[in-house]
Length: 64
Image 1 (cartoon, rainbow, N blue to C red):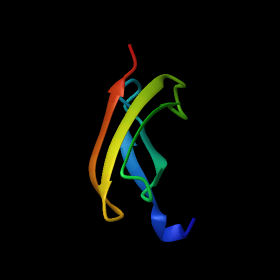
Image 2: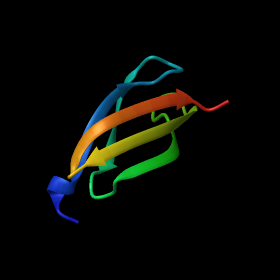
Image 3: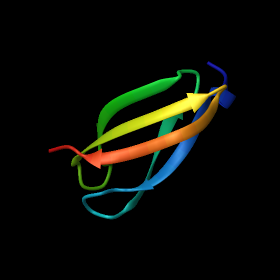
């Protein structure tokens, strides 16, 4: 994987409101996954979509 196929995305945790970041793989068209906040350890569901290697949609939600 080339380094230009990844991007660091900043966000605010929907639980603790701390700034965090995550590394996204832009070589896939879309992806959904759950990862814990690195500060408060609550699960966050991530959804993102790319077009031609560019991030065009990014959303996070609390896992219920």
